[in-house]
Amino acid sequence: MALKIELKPFERIIIGESLITNSDQRARFIIEGNAPILREKDILTAETANTPVKRIYLCVQMMYLENDIAKYQELYFDFVKDLLAAAPSCRKQIESASNHILSGSFYKALKDIKKLMTREATLLGN
Image (cartoon, rainbow, N blue to C red):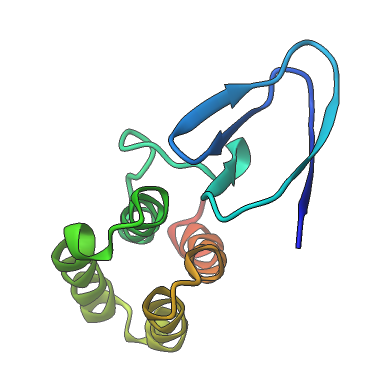
């Protein structure tokens, strides 16, 4: 099934290993294939991954973009262990994200973790 994307002017998107920046007009296109795709609003950088849940998100994002679970697996488990020690109530969503990772559904894992980011921001008062 094809993915329909509409980009705002100057919005960026990652497709595979390429960062694409839209021109000064809205653009609409259809993507077919299995390349990893992340819109600008879903991309975290190392500089913005400044909380425990954001670090987990960044780790899963890298697994997704590089299609390499093994490279980030130990780091992921370290981040998850630290989060669960501090906030055991996050276990259900972390387990769901982990199951998505194991089944190769990285985008679904990122969505689960994004929900945790919202919860974390509320708890931190942001």
